[in-house]
Length: 345
Image 1 (cartoon, one colour):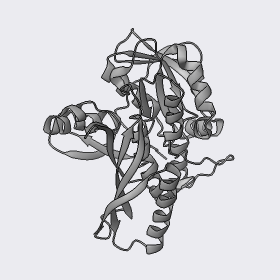
Image 2 (tube, one colour):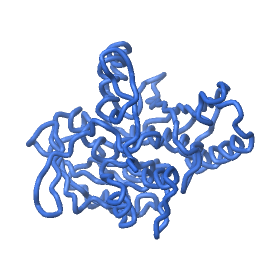
Image 3 (cartoon, one colour):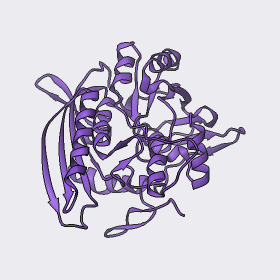
Image 4 (cartoon, helix red, strand yellow):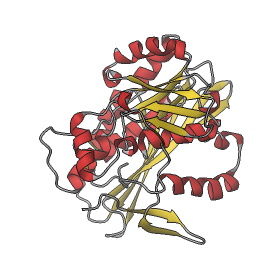
């Protein structure tokens, strides 16, 4: 069994399916096509959402599409994933999520009860996240053309942070924190796809993240950057920030929290938990002097009770992420040219 499944990649003139793709090559699409064609200051920030000023109000706006397979997985389904993924992108901008839209692409023959269950999950997730789903759209495509259901969501939030939060604000000496253990979402998806059972159940970590972010801001923490650790996991997110800021990031492998069942499953399946997607975890960059206070605040929130300090921003090796292994060696933690587990969100 090979967990490396086909994902899109770019050759000279077309997008193809092959073993590879994912993080690095998605960035090629962004760099070569989308940014040049749609260039504007809000887009060029390459943040989790666009920061906009409208009538004196500071807003964050984001959109995402969800093509997860299977539609239902341990700990969630495509519906609550779509809600939480979008409100979390707003939270990473320091914005309180307010309103969502939802677009459904449904495959002919999809059971109505399946759609009803997804809609119920979305309603419950929106309630938990404190947002309203206020507009939407539905399209039906031919059987065999939609893999059951795809969902697109867009969200608007009100920026609460007085300081800009994003890669440009990262400073040398910043502490790097993660909000909890990593890898559960990706492994939960794979376990269903492959019909695997583990001695200890592994469920997705999908959850809304505004509560711990708001707690950091209300607690007076000078948050420099936030990034949810979704597709490509911790390693890809850190590489994006290091490259965007032109700074080096040092990570202590022994400090990165990974539950033993997840670690064992990754070893069996040939996955690296540092690259496995999460849907309820984020990284925070804060001044080193405030790191312990920030951890104390995060650990008082249920969704971030397992927060840990895993590294720091360095002036050395600009644009690179360097991992110090458990045995004391060092290696570059690069962005994968492929994606370990596609269709996880």
